[in-house]
Length: 333
Image (cartoon, rainbow, N blue to C red):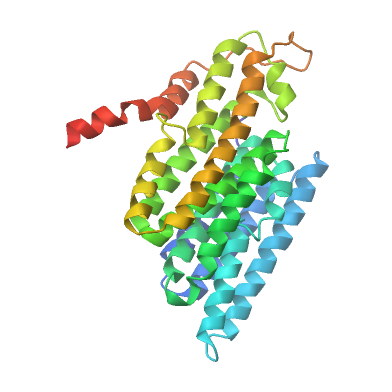
């Protein structure tokens, strides 16, 4: 579906707000960027024809406005108590990014969006809060971020187990990946950018596949199309890659983060992250195995039957690239 001129305008200002926020030399400029980003995203997700998107837009606006008001409040404490100000700023950024324990809005907002809007919320909307969080990480906030890492890992893993709606599964998956990204931020900015780049590519590929198949529930995947075999295999490999199963692409950033965390002696946090990764793989496998092992005749609402010729090779390459990694590293070394 081609974008309208207003959508192109709002998407441009959304990207401008993100760039302003991460490149600003002052916290006021960063706050302005976050507000521009928020006010550009609301028109992209609200729709007159869909009551769920209007509800999601309202929830998103209220939560982000709360985060912005906490940032303003933290600025008022900056002169009297810098520790309290930094703590409040960190809490506001975690709320805006959708990290646990401030994650309650995230799955319900995701549930009201279309897949292209889900991609923006899972990827672009996390850039500014996480970048600002990486600027804040010194001694005053070190007790908050590890707690958020552990909570996000557990909530993202356990919360997705009982879900049957694919958007909620992707939401809890995103919360779990937030734990890995915050761990990468604690180690170095390079590791965080690497992990975030891989996460954006793989989660976008999964959402694009779901959007192409027009599925929103596990049962929809079972009921899909005469060309289901290669689509199901493609979805299967993409989900395993998102879960970080070796030797798929999603394992590469996790492998690097695991090595760095071992070098930094972050063993307890790493153990929790690995345990949570196993649980996320369980619910990815549940989606994928259901699709592969249960077959159902084509139903009336399954109207899409062929996949674009350019999409299949690009998705396969994106998620199978990890198979080439050992040989590439051997060549480089």
